[in-house]
Each structure stands twice: as structure tokens, then as C-alpha cells.
Length: 166
Image 1 (tube, rainbow, N blue to C red):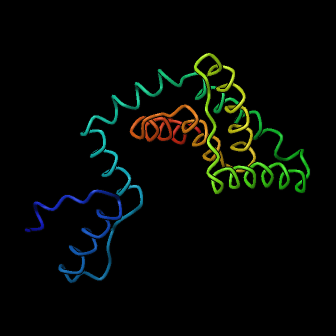
Image 2: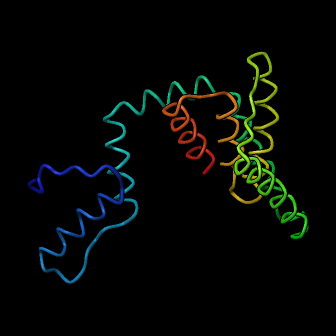
């Protein structure tokens, strides 16, 4: 397969392609940044319709996304006031519980009529963890699994939540 037709499927693939070009060129340095890789990967995703999927995810999960982002902002304001030990406990306990839940295979389910209250509660927990330590992924993943969200939609929701929360 010729190099011009090879299309890597990930930023690591992009990195490999660029490093191969650099090695073949015989230059002493390579000008590749993480931003270059992310932009190339993002552009490829946009070409595949990811923007429409992200927009649909934002509409469907708007309450959860807003609650997470607001709680990240609120919790981050208390970071300098709360004792360090309390932050470790506040982070360690939920992460340990979420780990045990995942390792034991316990599955939550959220009934459709309870979804809005779950979005508020889980969004507050995820945003609180995110404000203290930038860790809002585990509650988000468990929430999406509890709703039995299709994988493509999960990826879109997580991309939106992580992108906006960062």
C-alpha cells in the first residue's frame, strides 16, 4: 500500500505516519505537536459526521451537560478552601465505589420517568468530582451505561462533556 493512500485511524496513527516521513527525510528534527495530531484527528471525525452526532448528543443530554459544567465551576471555587485531606476523601471514596461497581459487573438501570432526576444527581456528583480533580468520566460512563445508551451516542456525549468541561 502506498503511503499517500494510507489513512491512519487515530492520532497515534498520524504520529506514526509523520515519524515515518521524518525518518525517510533524513532531517534532524521533527515539528509535530499534540495539537497537530488532535486537529488532524478532529478534522477526520468531522468529515465522518461527528459534528451532527455531537449536536444531537448535546440536545438529548443538555440537562446533564449543563449540570456537570456548572458543578465543575462551582466545585473548583472551593478547591482552595477545602482541606487537602477532605478532597482526597471526597475523590477517593467515589472513585473506589465506582471501581467496585465496574469490577463486580453490577448494572444500574434508570427508568425513563426517573431520567431527569438522575441527570441532576449524577451530573452534580460528576461535576463536583470534576471541579476538585478533573475526574468526571466514571460517573458519566456509569450514567450512560445505566440508560443503555448506544456506543456511538456514548462517545458523542463523552466528547461533548469532556470538551466543554475542559
